[in-house]
Length: 211
Image (cartoon, rainbow, N blue to C red):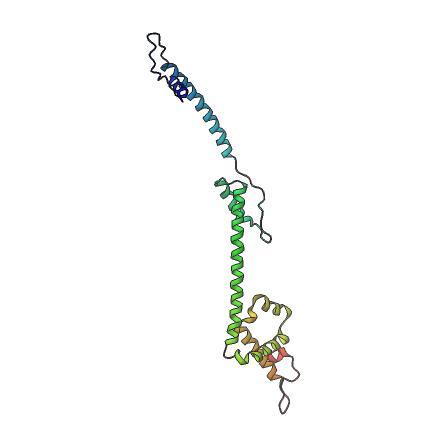
């Protein structure tokens, strides 16, 4: 400790030891040395700053980001994301973390939308069961009439649409198909004589003006 303190005092020119008339004033020498050191240090800092500035001017480039299976990058979104990541000076790892978070959020939102739609379809089925005109103890006969209408007038594509959209559970769609099924069934019954619809196709029975 004593040697360190003595050395610091000598470098700063603050040695209080009385050496008489022959004592050398080291204050000026120390000032010159410090000035030179400061100048050299400033030059190094300037050079380093210039080097860093040159690096900062170069745009950051990114490799392809890893994505969960089933998720694809949208070119328009990536066109906005890359400049944003560069502005924040994110490296590949930091940018990947943002991509991962965005993918996770997108997957969650997609699942929420699917769950909400499934809940809607289930709600339609419940409404149909509780409907006073087509549900309750009338439900089985209602569905039988509706299915008969589908068999007579529906196409495979229309049936698939009902399944894919879930609209086949909607009470108004079931009510509509039930009425069609009843009309076709009633017109096919002959009582006490010939019917005006005898020999007609289901389409002609439903649409009398059809030739």
